[in-house]
Image (cartoon, rainbow, N blue to C red; front, side):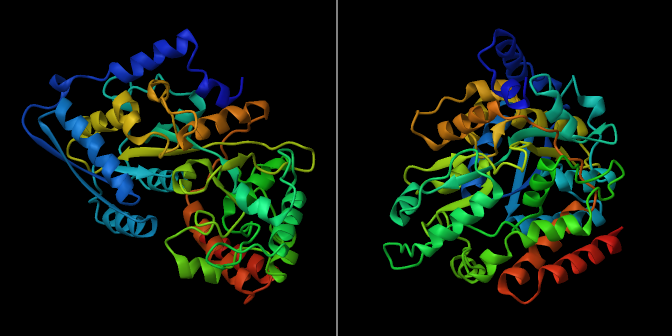
Length: 427
């Protein structure tokens, strides 16, 4: 059975039993330390996510009246700038939101709370798939509590596609098919109601994760267990070279336009027919009428090599209240009412009890998000790639160099040499 099938098999009696346990077996308020305690929590996101977190915190404080939770948030970049400064001073917030790459880095650097003493007591992960919990475990120590899972997909705006006259993609399309399709849609010359040109899609070098997906489809693991590369310079060059023609012909959504409309999203405002991104972004595309989602492109052998990343919450090693921190981690990750607050905005809930609590109208984006996950059950999945502690830095450098590549100020060969040199310098 695939990971997705296990995650979404909430109708089974066993899963329902586990879901009930995960959602309702958290220790009660009497288990919190005597006397008032104040915790700090931080996450990245916007005002919409802030409102959700505040609502969830209200639920927690109602159940644990002796614990007060103060919150703070910022955009992704400023969030990690603040965490880096606080980590150096050993003054991190008690609870923090983590992506997979940064969990590895902060865990290996000793900045996070070892949750092993609290699992089975304050923290209950029995409603989570083993592979998800494994993603929260670094070198045998559990540092994270998974709250949501994400995977890649191709979002499509059917109105732009119809206006272009180009045939829709078949779900078994390849990377070459996608490149040809993007070029055809752009060449069709579709314009938005306000006269802006619409493009077929976005550059496939935008994130290192797309390269990782491509590698997995070649049957290659991106990284060795010690964090060293299992790929070569030639692999990077081959991947980036495959889209040089589209960059040179300006078939991709231009980075200059992306800067102009920021923080808006080119796909969300109808200026792109497609975007390859994480399926947790459904909530960004509420204005895209008839939104459709396809799986990632297939590799040369027809396999898609679907994989999942995990969004976590983690505690700080410097917390003065580890048990209360563990209680807050558990509540946000397993309480069914919290799941109703966030829906699928943090990805598909990792806990079966939270997943079972979700009930959306059939035509809602949330229902489409869950339906997309169900559609992936026909494809083979692979394990979430092991990431080196330096991955966040490697990814940031990749993104920066790809912008230069998009603007035409560097070549693919220069990209490869500069990125590789940076990787070797990090060690």
